[in-house]
Length: 227
Image 1 (cartoon, helix red, strand yellow):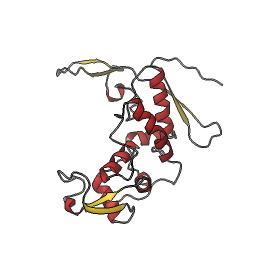
Image 2 (cartoon, rainbow, N blue to C red):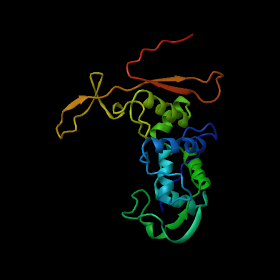
Image 3 (cartoon, helix red, strand yellow):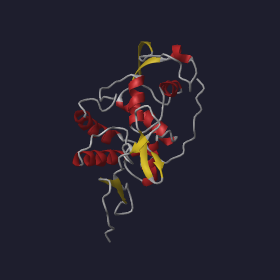
Image 4 (tube, rainbow, N blue to C red):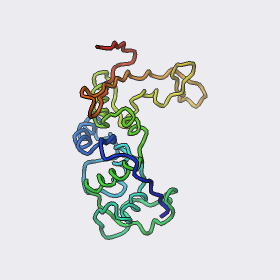
């Protein structure tokens, strides 16, 4: 497989993707909130390579199954090998990794295996935009998820995983003369007013060390600085 490895670019800590302890604490709550439809992710281990891929993506890291197969082949992670071929649908070859589908082993990914892959991906900046955002603002990913869920509950909004916290649907909106608009959704080229983004406040760590914290308020909330 033609996978190019990036050099290690970030220090060991603090991490800004969804850490294991935060993920394990929050996922049962989110699954209960949504009737089990929060994501195609469960906390049942060991899981397949597809399961590991979906969990890593949900936790703010970018990867594809064939990259995980390559990490196993190169000895970076060592999930248990089970009899048979790949324990996931192969379908079309992964465009980023070539056509070596037949060589894919049947792997059983435990928590430690997924976390080892997460550590490798994070240190080489295979980040999605929200991990990048948390890194830039020095936020703990899990605290952002928790704060956003609390905001959604207090404001009567439905919570959706994906952390589009800078506007839902304003995060996916077009901007025209400073006003967020979105496609009308009726097949036309009309645009209609999008829902305004919540107000986000980032509070630095009081001691100047550790993570900052974030809070969300309804759109239009007027805030004043407290000395």
